[in-house]
Amino acid sequence: MSASSKSIWPSGDQTSVLLVAAKRGDEQAVNRLLEKHRAPIRRLVELRLDRKVQRRVDVSDVVQDVMVEASGRLEKYLEDPAMAFHLWLRQIAWDRIIDTYRRHRVSAKRNMDREQPMSVPSNNDQSTMELAVQLCDPALTPAAAATQRELARNVEAAIERLNDQDREVILMRHYEHLSNLEIAEALSLNAPAASMRYLRAVRRLRALLEGADDSSVNVDDAK
Image 1 (spheres, helix red, strand yellow):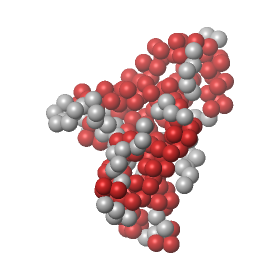
Image 2 (cartoon, one colour):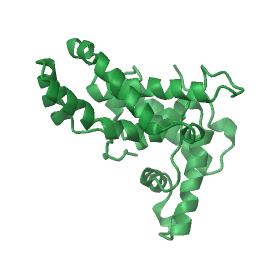
Image 3 (tube, helix red, strand yellow):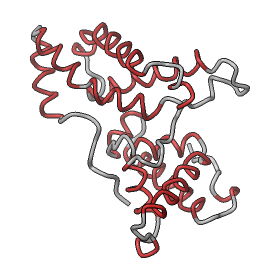
């Protein structure tokens, strides 16, 4: 099953040109580079930050914090780019999402260091429907709006029941639209390991949708 190619991130070629100019000290290129990624960062925050927290926190403030931090760390990144720029920026955003979650969910009972502040999009998200169609037999998926909404709700509920590792790779692949190689880089895995993690997560997600017993789908991935 392949993921959608509609990445939330800007074209790599355009980013590369701006990175070269930024490394030469072109301040305008720096500004364009960061501004070009503002909308994707906002999309990421809206996608991944717990919805209850989003009711109390202005997403724009979180995005601005990410951009300010990225601006301050950009020179060091340009000296030694250890990963693709959008993945580097994504990591800064992810750290900020976790920090925001922890500060605003201090009453949570579970250990906050283990808590994953992931939010599965509501069923009006096109990515949910695309994933649902891939997971289910299209012949059993009428075009009726009510049926589509129900299918989306089932997919969202199943994703929520996955363990953290499985949920993470599903969201990265189908909602952030990262490629297998990008996921591998972001998670510090080799490509075959990232692919296997994804395939296992899909198998467990499909089993949940088909009503399989939880014990068959919640086994931890092999390290």
